[in-house]
Length: 286
Image 1 (cartoon, rainbow, N blue to C red):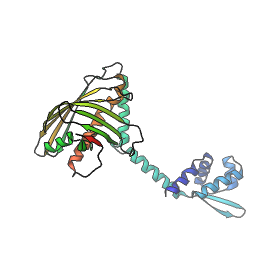
Image 2: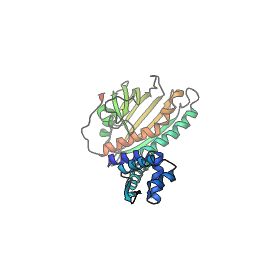
Image 3: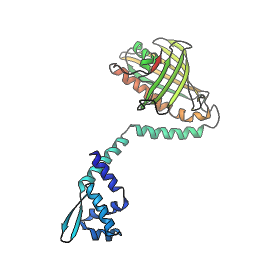
Image 4: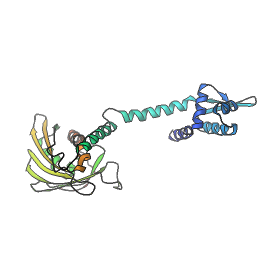
């Protein structure tokens, strides 16, 4: 089917052949008439029709001295179905394309706002998730690098390097790549460095994290304060995210905070809701 579809697309890519397909959609026609209607020479028209026939788009038969061609609608319907499926996949509600468009709108707005250093200072975001698992289990996913790596990126990304030293003054390194970049040959999507400020096991975790711009300088400093509260069914997690030290060039980073961190927390919720499985871990230190 894939090879057949390739042949169909190649055949239809030529404007002259596309014109012939349109004429044959109206009714079967002989080569001479098709050449006249298409405004082309008959030998050239014959070659185009033969290409369409090899691709399975038309059929022909002799009628006296003439060869008459007719369109085969089946392959066109298969192509239309394939294109519709592709469009439906890209257009599905809540899918990655919708997120891409939403991020694009955010980037435009933030770039307009980023006029001077400190432009986003004081900007804050709050997140809340009701999670399965007791605070002790949630705490492990917040502080142990092998578990943290399972969720600490938005969709379509993967952690490629992670250091999280869960103690006051502990070091944080967070690097991530495209989820499909298996061999690390593509560019690093993002890298951040930080330090842990406060550790109250199973209750509160606070740290600072600074994403790096492409030149290695700081985009901004994120101050994150995570609070855990036990509930009858698991744990409520509240996150306060505040920005300081914002550079003008940080607009693209700021534009993605609400979407990206929200997706990460959704991954955390999904991870805690399913049984733990063995997974490959990035280079990590706790």
